[in-house]
Image (cartoon, rainbow over all chains, first blue to last red):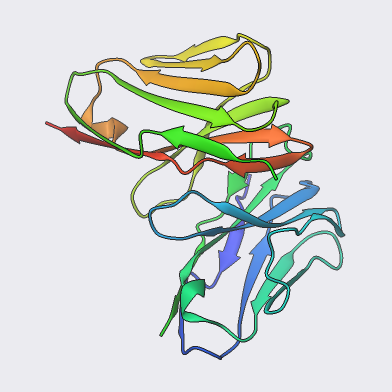
Length: 114
Length: 109
């Protein structure tokens, strides 16, 4: 079974630039999460999708972050414009159901904003 | 919103000593999950607890879910250097999975 795929693995951008991350969850997993993990902290939920609908995006800084999962499969997370404090690892995870089964994580995208 | 707290934040132990990390949620959980993240890696699922008072064991790891389903613990007996990493609990409430801040375990050989 293929795991959760994320790209790119690393990205360095200057502040005020834009960046996009891509995630392809495990086949058949209806729930997809984007987490932000700042160094030394636990993953912080940014947005949760159930199929192509948003379940929760209460912690997504909507003035600069956006995410979509148009066909209910892969997803993109965008930051525009980036700030220094956005430097973090962005983790995508998927589950078969909404939180009642184990979450499978991708390798993450390490973003550095300079 | 839901908050999940973990203590301690860091723990240094000598190889062979025991280790425990504690997790507390601000809300009652439908289940709690534990993950391990090695340095430079991503969180990997260890176990899920669902029932009040549930205790599960995986070799040297013992997981407990509190009676009120608001707290949990992970205990490792006789730590080994391979146990190094950060252990996260993740509480599920309202179909949202919220992670604690993690406990980073360092083991001295």
